[in-house]
Length: 233
Image (cartoon, rainbow, N blue to C red; front, side, top):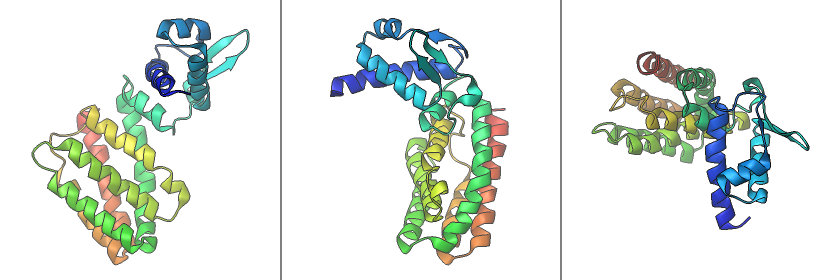
């Protein structure tokens, strides 16, 4: 695929994906590849490749003589970062944010406890660096800069857990944190208590205190759920 084709392919996905996940194309809708190619002014090969990607996410199924059929939401790959991004951009954002935040609250405290047992010196240093970066950008409405440190902090915790299943949730958590910021489901400045908790988690992991790392991370998760009650009820 040429660079131009990749750009066209991304444009098609960024239009069709949100249209499907938002319900613009309800389950059972049949889309014709030729018609879609004409609509988006792309070649059939670009359109077919876009459909293959949507199939890999279980958003659609494609059959000859039938076309591209939109699948019901329970069949979607809801862990795919792009599906998460598209759903967070839609009208179902509050429910999606809550669902993902509950998932985080179940996984990240355990991951932090494991990180206290398994983190390398480099990972401990990285956690401290990220936490201090969060402190430095937590005032003055610097949410985009804060987000960079926040994502890296949580990704590092998941990686440092030593559990490959947790580590692979890094992109999912990144999309949740990005979605909260980009869709204004955040206060103008992060909660100071939450920022401090991240610093304390980094300290607990570095000191090898698994129980404290898990407990503090659970506080962070509970705080995120409480914020949703206010900002995205």
